[in-house]
Length: 72
Image (tube, rainbow, N blue to C red):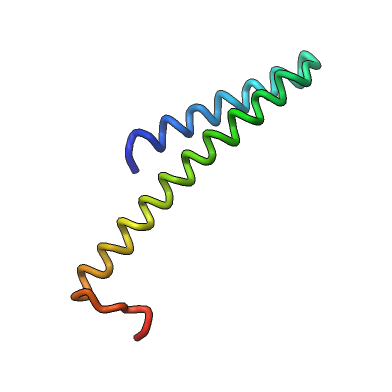
């Protein structure tokens, strides 16, 4: 995983804290903003996971001589 993954994870944690702060202080708008920020950062995490999956799949294909090993 690269640094972008961890950056997105830290944003998600910050968003969670914002949501909790909104709950404690009874500020629904702050909670909504926190949720929206968390969803954006989770999308960034998803993209990083997909890149990692693609890299791993490409490595499997290279190691198997370019053959599709799922057909075996």
